[in-house]
Length: 227
Length: 405
Ligand SMILES: Nc1ncnc2c1ncn2[C@@H]1O[C@H](COP(=O)(O)OP(=O)(O)O)[C@@H](O)[C@H]1O
Ligand SMILES: [Mg+2]
Image 1 (cartoon, chains in turn green, purple):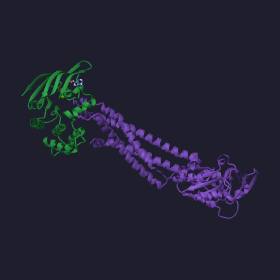
Image 2: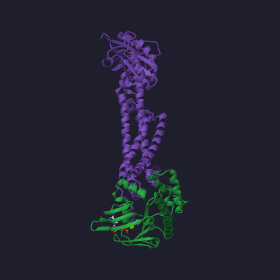
Image 3: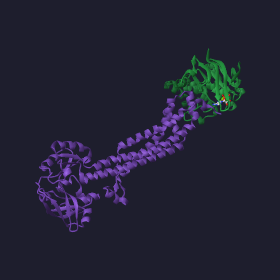
Image 4: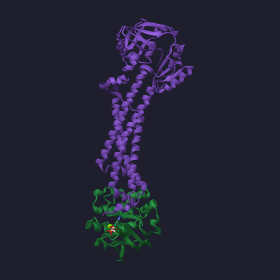
């Protein structure tokens, strides 16, 4: 079943001299349970595309349909709630709230969703165990390595039980060992829990873990292959 | 969790928050202490006016306070005195003759208010008997004794045991004289009062002007405490017929004005302090929002709505200001309490103060209402200070905030 349908999507920035077509007519669908990498050189439009897809940045034209909901037909507060309940985010940096512990960062999302204390407590623990941080529940982000922080971010993204997880260059700031660990965790979650991941990267090793590779260039999709 | 998030955010930049907290503490502490100081000064001034001159309640013939004429006396006043004495809460009731006239020495003369009192009864309402610098309080039996203020003694150039002459118009408008011996010189630390009031025995004065022995112009009533004044006044009104019954607040517009003006002045002072703090806090919170652009963007991206973002900034600002406010209130209270029993000595400026009737030793006086109001005002300041920074935070665009380039 396809959970994301994208029709004729454009994002055009009106620069002072030239207009930049950051996303230039994209049509694509994503199925539940996919493990997709968006690849392409820097400036090819990956971040912009993920922001449009995630309801963070309004497209110039075109539609993003998630589970039969036209995301950009939602306004203000509804859109924020839509993100809260349907999309998990992992960013390249600034993922976590520095004054909250790992556990609290994960719990926070569920509190925003209004879930019960009991559920929050249990789910937080099992999620952090799933990303291999069962022993770092009470550490603040500055006491964790970059790789550990990204794993907390993955746990946080999963906490809301989203329909899919968007990750914009999640490994860009990590060394190769941490990169591998993070990808393995994501892959396991995908395989065992059927979690849908869409992540961008310009790292070939990361790309090779994906089972679908979408290549972008100048805001267009150059190729889309299932491996 | 937003509450604890905001609280922890306050302590992210410890130095910066501490500066604001210390500034708030000092400002609020200074505000409360000044308020307690001036309140103490005003309270003492009022207390003194009550103790030396006004007492709590006075009864007159309706015409008397305007006319000040001898003929406007209360007749049968002794009976009324006894009835009032029986009211619950009444400590002392003194019948006074009050005549505005002249007193002169060999050197010079001066216009004064001559107060004819029953010395024992007056002791229970005012404290002139405790203010004597020299001499005694009507202790001898001899007739025609007078107490005068130190200032007046200087002016008339008289000493203890000197004779002064009181000149009066009696009920029939005939001029009469009486020679009185100065048996006591008082100093109430209110120069204006000391210069304008003299005290003689009620009997001596009523004989001089041919009034019945139980006539008086003024019945002064002293009550066990200030809170009972209104209830006692109501009871006195019931038995006083068509006489005029007034409490010190009505009797002395200056005193009630002093009471209110001090309040107003204190609040203006505190508002000015808070206004200065307001801008400091706004500035700090704007820096906070600016520093956390990315974080706020992330929070919006993952699903924290605007109301919650607003609440988060609001709470952080309120915590920041209330922390300093609470310490300031505590410190101000402690400081004020300390000086409540150990007076602050203004002796260096004593003349200026005593001329106005103020005591050179000031005991601070702090009321709980002020503390509550100040706390609420700090809270309001925090809320106000948060509005603009919170508005700035809400203008964040989650997609801009997340670009790492
Ligand atoms: N806010 C913006 N205003 C103008 N141009 C932008 C803005 N954001 C991105 N761009 C441009 O859009 C293009 C795509 O950028 P981006 O989506 O960040 O690519 P990628 O993530 O693949 O590196 C780039 O040419 C970039 O300069
Ligand atoms: Mg990018």
